[in-house]
Image 1 (cartoon, one colour):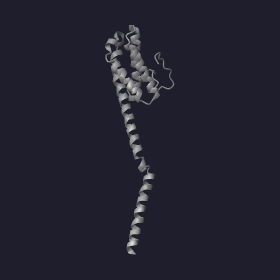
Image 2 (cartoon, rainbow, N blue to C red):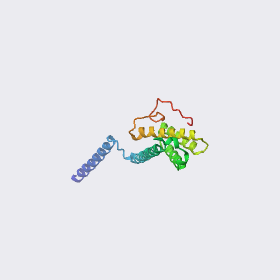
Image 3 (spheres, rainbow, N blue to C red):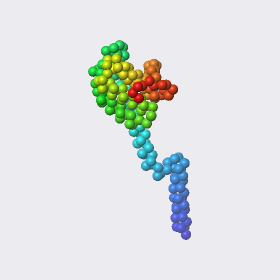
Length: 173
């Protein structure tokens, strides 16, 4: 009889502990069956963060390069021969366009792609090249401020991203 009582007590204790752990997991939001879903969500979040980091670095690097090309009077001597690797940059922008979920940022990347393709076409006169170079610089400049905290306080207002109330003057959109 003592053995039956001891076994019954152990069984009840085991069931109580198991039930307590299960309830604790539910209260804390840790459903044992949801761990697979959480892992997938974590992987997706990691991929999104990586894409965000990559596009931010791309914007910063391109902004620095376009600063070199158009600021301090350089726009007056700008020509497409100064810009090498346009195809590579177009492809990078296209890949980020596909990875980023922000529709406004996608619009800005699409404008960048269109400007670069137009610049790469070699169908422009000097004034048109310089105009597109200014537009590209200003797109990168504003995006660098909005996305990376670039310290210049001049905002040209040419991006869709973070500028909901502006009218974007962009013939290639």
